[in-house]
Length: 157
View 1 (cartoon, rainbow, N blue to C red):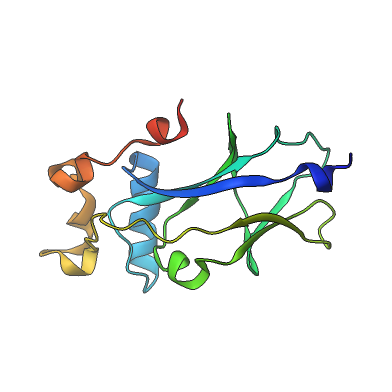
View 2 (view 1 turned 90 degrees about the vertical axis):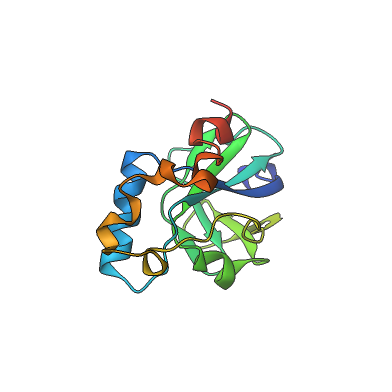
């Protein structure tokens, strides 16, 4: 059986995650350099694989619709990537997830990007009083944020 037929996603989930220090810096950077309505948390999209991630000499390229996911990581059940811009879900929810082993041929994984999780805090820097930089100084002061799981909890690490 070749790599292309072994790479099947059995399910895809999206979870809002409490940011760590590096994630807060990334959110602050996006907030200050773009017109993106960045929230005070980010999302992890997990792709559960039917079999272990194939070992290859070249990196597997991951796509959601036409958008390439430049950075992803593995976890015990498959692989995951972070989404800092909640608009990514609006643009790509329901689109097929593809992989490419050679950079040109895309293989449908059998999964689609889930919708943005509902019921999560939707606080943005623009909606907060005071200067934008103060928006994430103390993210755990927000009770909704403190209830979000950590990355380690979401990945089962």
